[in-house]
Length: 91
Image 1 (cartoon, rainbow, N blue to C red):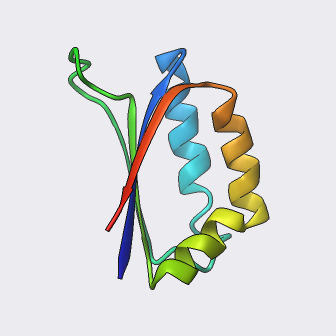
Image 2 (cartoon, one colour):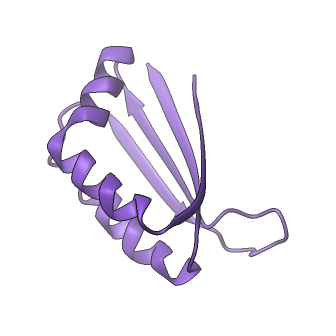
């Protein structure tokens, strides 16, 4: 199993709830997603990010298939225009 974690900071934090909805909508559309958790920051602290995305994939090929899927690319395009920063780790 490969876990993909992404932290997102939005230019306008008010975009985070819609981002959560858009990301969760990908689950039934993309077969390479084995599991997904999307969380919105509740603390709003100095070092907080606005949204955390955790997806699980069978392997690296599954992650790459998810990342290249047209529906993911569409969501990523929407996100990219609104992000101030993004960080990720895969393990």
